[in-house]
Image 1 (cartoon, rainbow, N blue to C red):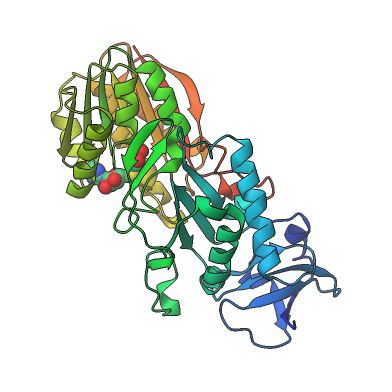
Image 2: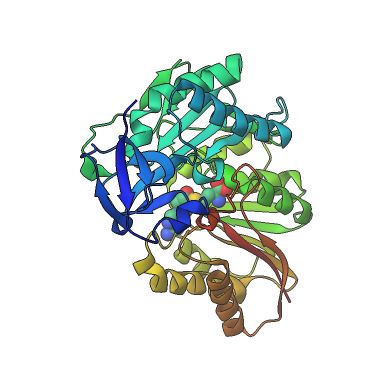
Length: 394
Ligand code: SAH
């Protein structure tokens, strides 16, 4: 196959030679023809050495590299990549029904497939394309998933309306690319939950908090727990299994609260320890009094772009300040940021300012991140996005 050739400016090959998978638009010197968005292109250094093959797109990232060796991107390529990713999840004991059938199969650059996310819920794979090249490859990827995972997978749902650049005007529609059977209960660490990949946020569930939920279970016994920004209640059902005295789940989305209630009912029918409230976080925190001694703060990304960083850090500071003011002595706070542009150091600084403002004695017990099925390629440190601190407040 003849892929269009992209030539880089002098010295711009260095990051690719260190296996960083992005070519920025400013690095390009010339092209031997004009690729369409989503086309496969070959990237060459100015001395004509081959550097990689990847998907072309108009924007600040012009090429996302799929392979650093010269090859055709065909069915065997997709199968190879998906097999490697699936083998890793099996080695991590995540494909472990009936105890666990929920995991991230493909984490973009962390699985050497920039622009692609695939989450697995029981027998359904939910695919999300973040690049036009991945959008064009969706059928080939679906075939590879089915080929590699066999009858484990009965449905592949494509959910990219919200993640593809809208300027590309692809007119894409979410829907099943394979199967279509309605099955909506998945299992994480022996806890069941309904997942709504059709209308839910992201792919339907926040798999990235699995290990951190595990940790909350260990600290919940006898505590009064507030799960703020609960979405579908993940942290709440772990806290209940851990023996919490009461668990209150709060989210501004009424739909999320309805699903939280159903999920709690699924695992702990008629258990009166749990209550859920649809409310704004700041309003609830201001009015809640001092009844909680375990608080989870897992807000949505406050900064989606670098320009929003300052405001985001203010937001994290303010949010945590209220928690520090209100949490009971001897309380434990789980606090998170999932903004990619907020570094570990920045986040810690925001929590530090909030703690200092409260004047309380605060110690860090754990420093948390994303779980192993959200791996970070050592060549692409930007892939580390989830940061959390567990602190003890006297
Ligand atoms: N902790 C969750 C994921 C949280 S995602 C889990 O483990 O699954 C962030 C959530 O914050 C979303 O459900 C969103 O509806 C909610 N949210 C956004 N803004 C909010 C606000 N101002 N007050 C309360 N909840 C908010």
